[in-house]
Length: 276
Image (cartoon, rainbow, N blue to C red; front, top):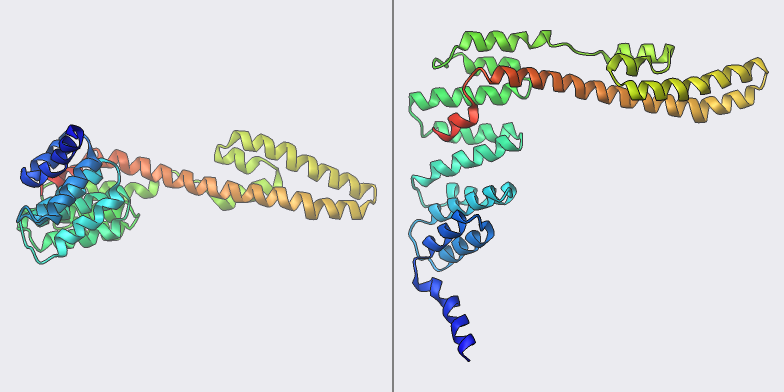
């Protein structure tokens, strides 16, 4: 009986205590889902007039628990509900950060547009800078430079020069790799820096080609045709597709590494976003 009374006491206690303090306590202790449950209970019992603040804290708990996809709904609810508060701006900034983390730059720009409507000229300047980087990371250099033009708190000309220099970042040619692979098996992989697959291609495709040539010399045309159709074309085309994929990824990585080096010379967009 005593145990039941104690259990009931702890169940109903949060209804009479300031639950938001309990939620904050859970959040401070990194008990994220317990914090979310507490904030939901607070909203349900309408124990606070600051619904937007609770929704923001709920989203923050999800975000810190690395469940950013769950954080979006409470943020959007806080932004779009009838309750207008100073918390709306914090919600917009957190939502923009989530889109940045997920590389969803288009969605992030929509959020930045909403932030712009609530910003003075100084903050607008910073939002233009952040927006520019969303285009730069999408390789839309023209739009990125366009948004940089009105920015005046950094060395804009230097950043634009750095962006223009992206064209000199070394890139591999898929056409060249395919051409030399067709001449010498494995040569394309060697050109792309894929040394292990270069050896495999040279041994596998090269041996099949050599056997086909030998069959033709021996006038075993049917065997040669069968090997060509079912072995050589399969191994060769598969290898070329993998080669093209590797070159694309390596080219993207080279540009990414270049942009990372460039970005370290200038203010971090996410840091600026947090201080808007």
